[in-house]
Amino acid sequence: MKNDNLKGQHRINEQIRAKEVRIVGDEVESKVYPIAQALKLAEEHEADLVEISPNAQPPVCRIIDYSKFLYQLKKRQKEQKAKQVKVNVKEIRFGPQTDDHDYNFKLKHAIGFLEDGDKVKAYVFFKGRSILFKEQGEVLLLRFANDLEEYAKVDQMPVLEGKRMTIQLSPKKGVSSKKPAAKPAEPVTVAENKE
Image (cartoon, rainbow, N blue to C red; front, side, top):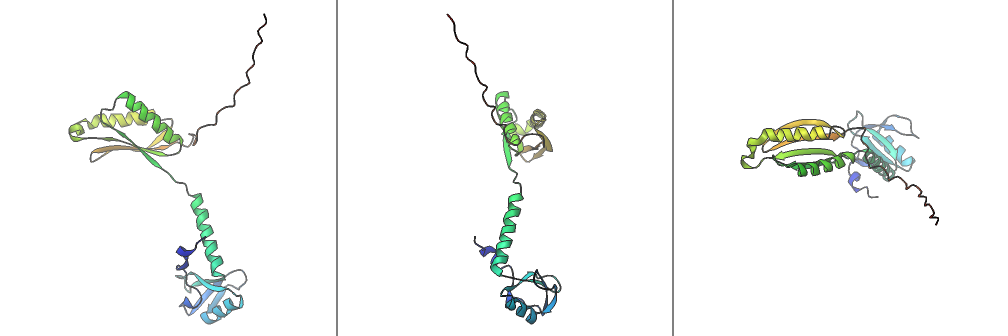
C-alpha cells in the first residue's frame, strides 16, 4: 500500500516548530512538554514524534512509528470510503409529444433503475417551437411520476430550465434493491400410461 499522498501532511521530529507540545498516547503521560524533552522521549521509545493536531494550543503530538501512523490513517480512510453509499442518477429523455409505446418503454427502464436503488431524473426537451407545448411536457412528467408512485417518491416537481423541463425521483425505502432470486423448480411427476 502506498502512503505517498499522506506523507507530506504531518510534521515529524525536527520539523515541528512549536516551543512546547502536548503529547498523547498509550505509553506516555499526557501532558505538555518542551519540544527538546518531547524529542528525547520519542528517541527513548525508538519512535517518531508526529504532530497530529497542529492548530491546537499547544500543538498535539504523538509518539509512534511514522510508517505505522500512516498505515493506520490509510486503513481508517479505506473503512470510511467503504461505508459511503454511492447514488447514481439515471436520466430519461422525453419529447413533448412522446407516443404511448415509447413512454411505456422508458417507464419500464425507470422502474428497473429505481429497483436497483438509483435516482431517476426525467426531462422533456423542447426543440425550436415545441416550447409552445410546455403544458404537454408538464402533464407527461406528472403522469410519469404518478405511474411510478409505488416505486418512487418525487424529490422535485416539474421545473422548466431553459429548453428542459425536469422532474427528480428517488426510490422508496420499501422497494427491493435487487431483483428476487428465481424460485427452485417444483418436482414434476409423470403418470405412467397403462394400456
